[in-house]
Length: 88
Image 1 (cartoon, one colour):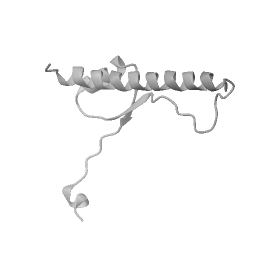
Image 2 (image 1 turned 45 degrees about the vertical axis):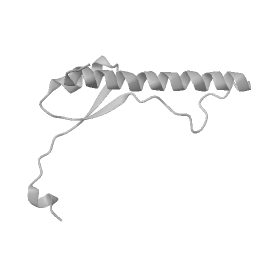
Image 3 (image 1 turned 30 degrees about the vertical axis):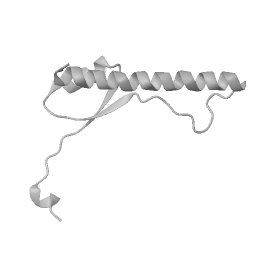
Image 4 (image 1 turned 45 degrees about the horizontal axis):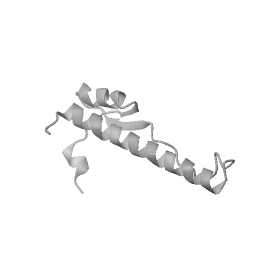
């Protein structure tokens, strides 16, 4: 099914959010099964991603998609560079 850019980005971000939720649920079930319910905040515990790093461009669609997916944006400032500074 063809989708516009905004819908595609929203669906991707929502799929990532759902995968994180399913992973957390599976981990909680495993902890309960092992009887280690007091193991909260332990070392190496993964946290869900909340932020999307966004290179600021003149398109609000990306920003709307981030908010639609329930995430927050971390906006990178746009800086122009010359072609000469990229050459090695």
